[in-house]
Image 1 (cartoon, helix red, strand yellow):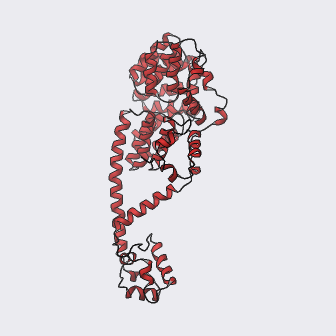
Image 2 (cartoon, rainbow, N blue to C red; image 1 turned 45 degrees about the horizontal axis):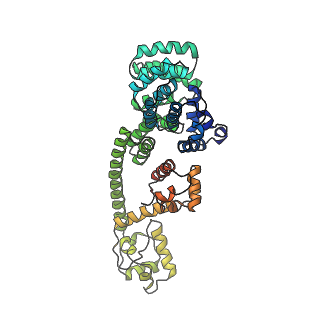
Image 3 (cartoon, helix red, strand yellow; image 1 turned 60 degrees about the vertical axis):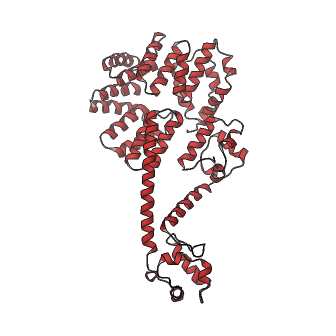
Length: 443
């Protein structure tokens, strides 16, 4: 998440949750703020386990349970939020947020049902826009256009109005007309997320995956991130053979919604493709290294002293040379430290080194895996200050006295959960960040 502490510091989520009447606009604004601030997100997550002060300010137990459901939705836990809100006694507020949660999950019919119930309790521009969008996506274009006519009169030249008109044209197959509306929306608000998503989708659909990738990546940096943005971005990365980034996209969706069926399926396929890709990549590296090890030493410009020493040892190729230890070379007459330095420089320039074990055979497969391990160890040595972490994770690092990624992955989940104010939400965030670097906590 992108921290905006200046904005977040003036927002008290407990104050809003404890206020009896909150508008649709306020809820939507708070959700945007929550997903743009680590501090605000952590404050809301803390309320899940300490809701008492908020509950005491509300008028009924039903209102308390409704606000708990809204709190889950604010945190992006839409599936849990919908289940909670559908279990309380119905109100205009619970119906509106349930409609938004169902829309997040792609449950369009349930979302429309809840939106209709919310409308019975009173209209708002946010509700009208939501209902129109849901109707368009369900193919009920005439009903959607009727709502849009009212919406346009009330709200005039707003980006959401142009987006919805474009969406209706888009779903009718009138792409040029849709693009004109989308462009108008972006003239008013260049960062309008829904419009950018549809543009990226259309570019992807018509084969311009470079432009689609550019827009999806820009959208991914906005908060809150739409699930379909991340899924589509993952699919483009898969098409390009970048399976690691695709996996990171699908995992991000599953971190927010562990039961997301498509994300789970895509993740499984991407991991299988990544394994196949790495196997092929390792095979290519091994083949290339085999060719290098077979290179005759005569092809290299070595000093006469070095050539004579290597000839005495009967060494003819690089592969035979790297099988020798430094001690074995130094035992050869006239082979001193200067010649050893020359050999080290020759090998080092090609990513090779002398053996550390006498008589050990040198296989390209082993050398490739040693190089990969060295790369990983380089990551483990990086200080944690090189990366961005939430406040709770940083405090846990301080408590556990870890300073590098290697020290982090040497800890278990239980080590972190034992830290004060470090719960499952923080653990999930930590595991996700480590997973993106190909790392995991000790088991």
